[in-house]
Length: 235
Image 1 (tube, rainbow, N blue to C red):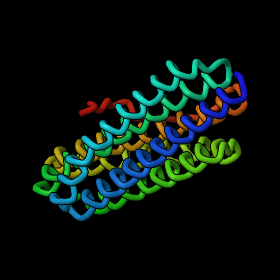
Image 2: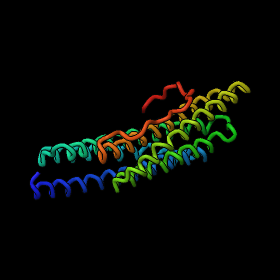
Image 3: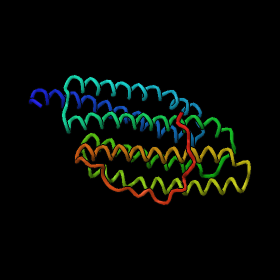
Image 4: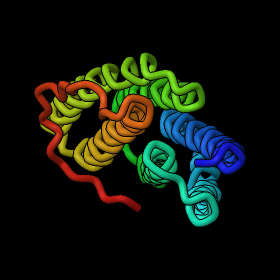
């Protein structure tokens, strides 16, 4: 590109990247608030997360519109085009993360009226915190183009998978011990699976960073010995 066109592209992209980071902050808050509402059985906080998902959806739509305008006006080539497309993918991943946080929050009223499963909500909150920290670091890597940090995020996804498998075994044990635990434990299984999928989305975002910077997708991921086969609907 001509220097003045390249400068305009970089300036526009910087504005879009800032929007992505702001959207990421909204998603981080949604994940942590949903997990906190789950542990404390706080239905009001859960509803705040559910209602807040509209703002996350709107942020993705606005970012996509900004990228489309950028492509139409600047007509970027090669690496710049790859960067613009990766930004749209990142925004899409963030929107899906928000959906999973909303799904977690929507289960709070049901679980608040169900028998307490000792340690379950606290364990899920720890799992969500791990994903939340991965997201924080992925967004930091996105802002700085830090591929080393992006690779570190990718390696941590195995820990999320391992936690999911351990929680599944624990919930199955509770269900076998007392039939009254079946309903709440099934909800917890879906939540654990959703959090695992959150980790996958964050990892995908980290892989996008490496792809944009180095032209490759990153590192081979070890998904471990997963027993997580139950699908959870996206609300």
